[in-house]
Structure formats: C-alpha cells, structure tokens
Amino acid sequence: MSPALIGAVSAIFGAIMGASVSLLLALLNHKRESKKHEETLFMNSLSLLAGDENQRSAGLSIIEGRFAKDTEYIDILLPALSSMAVFLLLHTKNTESRVEFFNWLRVMDILDNIFQEYNPAGGYLGEVGNSLHIKAADIKHNNGMGDGIEMTMGTLRQWAKKYSSEDIEQEI
Image 1 (cartoon, one colour):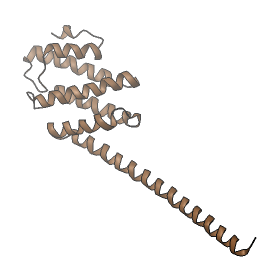
Image 2: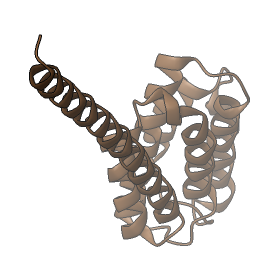
Image 3: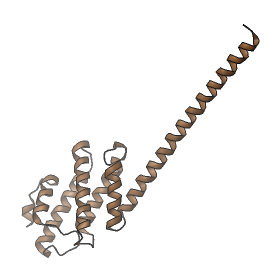
Image 4: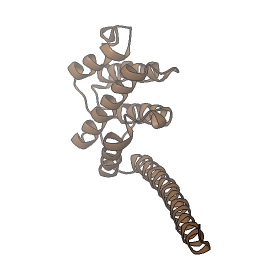
C-alpha cells in the first residue's frame, strides 16, 4: 500500500471521526439547552399562578399543554395546584369572577387526573376535600358571601364526592 493512499485514508478517517465528535457534542448541547428552556418555561408557568386571574389562566394553559402529564413534574405540580385549588375556593377576593371559577375547574381537572393516574402519597387529596367542607360551611353560615370563588351547592357536592369520604350534606 502506498504511503499516499495510507495518508488519504487516514485523513478521511480523521475527518469522519472529527465530524462524528462534533455532531455528538452539538446534539448533547441541544439537549442541554432544550432542558434548560423547558425548566425555565415550567418555572415561569408556576410564577404566573401567583398573578392575577388572567396570568393564572395563562400559567394553567402552559401547565395543561406541556407539564400536567409529565411524571417529572408531578411532585411539584401536586402541592402547587392543591394549594391553588384551596386558595381559589376559600381565599381569593375575586369572588364573582367567572375566570377564577374556570381556573379552579381547570386546576381540579389537572389534580383529578394526577390523583387517578399516579395515586400520589401525601395529604393533598384530604387538603382539597377539607376545603370543600369549609366552603360548604361558608355557604351555609355566610350565604356564600365570604372569600373564595362563587359556587353553587350542586357543583360543590359533585367535587366533594370525589375528594371526601364524608357527606358534605352534614355541613349544610
């Protein structure tokens, strides 16, 4: 074999190896940047939950569309959304806001899917169930005029059946 041919083969082999390493590094960098972008999007969506009703709605849209079914984020979403459900039900000052009511329904739908699919440990199911009982007592004693979203007893009963082993009728 001639030295020129050996040199040419070596050069081609070196170029292929160099291109392969460059491609591998580019793919790894892309994966790292994508993950970084995804984590930033997730944190921004959680931050939006603390805003006004329209920001909360936007944050929920991102969570519903991208993160609600991703097991990597369930451990963070569960406490965040459980707290959001309780806040909207009992503490928001936007009591007559239909946007907040629909935000609450969206939160509850996400939580319902998490509870059914992943059967998570912890007191989150009980926390949500307890807040439904507190809301029932509020409706009875304050005619529903306290803080938290406006809700009919029928809607409250439907959700209480899912989240509480106790009969909500005893609150009325």
